[in-house]
Each structure stands twice: as structure tokens, then as C-alpha cells.
Length: 607
Image (cartoon, rainbow, N blue to C red; front, side, top):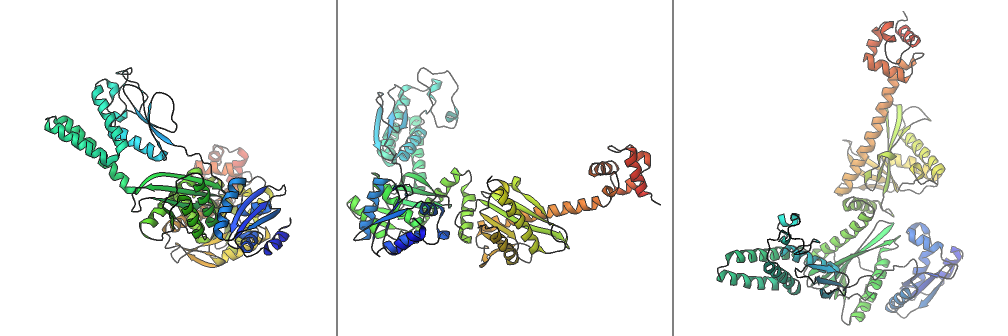
């Protein structure tokens, strides 16, 4: 169906809460959403496509018709939407795989027992403690117990492997007793295993109590060496407990959810707290995200529909418009009141920021970059109001000397780093004299003419940048904007403005200047990029001037090209020495013949 016809039908919808269902030409459901006012929400899809993310545009392109169901309230719409998404699993909705199983602590059946963590319980004669909901918590606890009580984590078997090899690094850094040496008694080893199991079952505080009692008994029995070893274990447990306090919070039980998107992908990060301690964390990456608030609601409903335990407190990095309906839905599922908050300051706001940073880090790892590079590009996107993170940036600068040897340089930054193989040099061809605006317009015109020829390749000039930054102010921007319109290219365009000391001051666009002095990371990034494009264009200009001076002397002589000119300079060092050389010396120079030597000699001895 034509998009105008879809919009006409959407404008005829009632201003009632409800659920809308998008179908493609084959009748398959491709998206399900809910709305407080059906007419307002659905008509947005079929308006101007320029303001929609890529995922929404693609979804709208595939819509042939839509249906709707009117509900009595937004809460009923939320429940119906959740039920329909589970039933039909539409392509453009958020769908999470519920592959979170239970985890176990495994104690091997050998005489010399080892403690490991497992995702499945097997019928292998071992002892399993659990199940536990959090694999993160089990893994961390087992690793801590093995370190504190110095138990081996290698694949060696005892007593079969006694003395067969030297102890590993863990022994030397005091994280393993090294029973492989054969110098550790079974009684001592077994005692450490029992203490580790007490630590895992009872927690750090209970473990400290028991170890303290054992230390005091050893001291009373004058077993000072044993008491000292137990004291070291107590200190290790307390030290590990102090580390855990770094992620302890004042709210006893809560989930924290934050969202990060680069325009192409989105990531939801979940931190789960029990008893004020971080007990689990996981992230979910979605391709081609739509709207942050709408997707947050969908994520929460899908996430907690998958048999996950619902917390009393849910802390988000943004408050959805339908937060009241969400609270009611979660409260009814839990059977008691659930509170949703989006803190703006204090401890909880810092926790949300940490959660969002981890979401950014997860996306950064996928794209092979660091979270620092990712965050500065995200901040730049926010400042400039871009749809997506500018992963591929092109920057241009003009260089000349009083209108002579007009050149331009283009540098490329990919994922926040210089991509030097993509750098390009331009010689201004179509006019002479000094006109930076006309020069910049010519360079971009040539660049996008190349794009039209190479766009099918998607490489080099066949790739569109996510952002263009010109070394200059609003004059350069105004000169280039018509070029982009001429080629039908929709790329964000800005200029980098310098102050009187030739230092970066601001970014300018058609809407005016944007100050970046207070944004340290962005300011540093833009300054480095501006310095790099200036260095590159000036370097090319100096090269052209040097070559020009070179051409006006030696290469003007008949029979002397670039190769012979370079050989003469390398041999005689200066033009004056070439001028003073006799014919025989010129003939003996590499690359020279009798005729070329005679031509050079006659050129400098015309009198």
C-alpha cells in the first residue's frame, strides 16, 4: 500500500489507547506496538521518513497494511502487546533468547577434591552445590575461594602427578599450595577444601567467624605456625570482602538497566543487586535500534516475561512515558509493589552511569575499539545532533601561499583513529589565485563526483562519510552545502573554527556555532583532527612548492627528467656545484649520457 494511503488511514484512527499490528505484503506480522493514543503514534510512522532511525524506515518500507485493537487503558495495551509479541515474535520487535540456566558449585569425587563451577549438573559421582540463579556470582565465588584457600585450578591429578613437573606461577604468587610437589599433606589440603566450602556455603562473615575460632584454638594449643596460616586466610577473606564493597549499594535489592546506542546497534546492560551486592550482570545487543524509550519498555516486558525474578526496585537511565503501566504490570507479576526510578543525582545516578558505560563497552568490544573512543564519538554525536555515531569522518583543509600552489588535504578518522591509507591530496585545478571558499567547493565537488562513479564498491571514495568537518568557519560550510545538494548527498557538514592563536575554538554549522571548550574529550578529539588535516595539507603544499622550484631549473633542460635531475642533485649536492662542473664530471654522474651532460653544460654556460 502507498505510504500516503497508510498515513490517511492512520489519521483516521481514534485517540484511544491500544495496540497496532503491522503486516507485510504476505500478511506476516512484522511489528507490534502499543500507544496511549493510536492516531498520534501510528501516524508518526507514515510521516516524514527523514526523522526516523534506519530500522524504522526499513520497517515502514515493508508495511503493506496495519490492524489495531482498542484497549480501555494503557496498562491493558501493555499486557496485550507483551502477549502478542510472545505469540508472533515479529521481526522488528526486541526478542531475547532465554538461555540463562542455573549454575552449580562442583566438588570433584576424587580423594584430593577440587572445586569448580559448572553450568549443568552431571551424573558423574561429583557433589553439586546449588542450583544458583547467577552464573556470574557462582564463577566469582569459586574463583575467590580457590585463591583464598590456595587450592589448585590446574588439570593435574593427585597423587598420580606428584613430582612430575615444577609448580606453576600460582604457587609462586601464593595462590596455590602446590600439592603437585608432593610436599603437602592430605590432611592440610583437605582442611583447606573444607574451609573453602564453608566460605562458599556460609559467606565471608560466617567464614571469618569459624576461621577466627580455629585460629584461637591453635594459638591456645601453642600451634603458632598453624594460627599464622589461619590468620592469613582471615585477612584474605576480609580483603576480598572489601573489594566487593566497591559495588555495594544502599538499596538492598534492585535491578539497574541502562541503554546505549550508536545508531546502528543498541545495547541493554543489566546489573542485578541482592543484599546490596552485585550478584549478576548481562547485556543484550540489538541491531538497528528504533526509539530509546519505546525500546526500553519493550525490553523490560520481554526480559521479565522470560521467568526472571522481578526486583522490588527497578532503576533505569531514562523514564519511559508508560512507567506507571510498567510499574503496575511488574507489581502484578511479583505480587507486591515495584518501584521504577530514573535518578538524576547521587549514588544511584552514578550506578546508572556505570551501567551505561558497560553497555557502551560491550558495543565497543564488538566493533574492535575502546570505550573511551566510543564515548567521545557518542558525545560528538550528541553535541552535533547526529542520527548515528560518526564512525567514518572526513576532514578537509586548503593550503596555499598568496594564491600560488593551491592544494587541499583530506584526512579520514575511522572509529576515532586516523585511517592513513584513506588520506587524499588535491591540486586545485579550475582557477588561479586565492579563494579558499571556491577551493573547498571544488574539492568536495570532485570528491562526490568520484562517489557517484564508485558507490557500488563501497570503498574509498565509494563510501559515504558519517560526518564531514571542514577546517574553517561558516563561509566554508556555506560554500560546500550547495555541492552536497547538487550530488544529492545527505551527510552532516560542519566547520572547525579557530581562535586568533590558531587553536580550535568551536564547531560551526548552518545553525550557528557550537562551543566545545567545556567538553574536554570532544575538544581534544576535534583539536587533534584539525591539527592533523592542517599538517597534511600544509605538507602537501610544501612538497608542491619544492617540486615547483625543482622543475624551474634542472627539469627545464632538454633531455633531463626527474630521474636524472635527482641523480645530479644527489651527486653534486647543490645547483651551484652542477653549474660549476665541467663536461667530464657531468658525464660521469650516474644516469647521465654524453648528450644529456652536454645539454646541462650548455644550459649553464650559454655565454
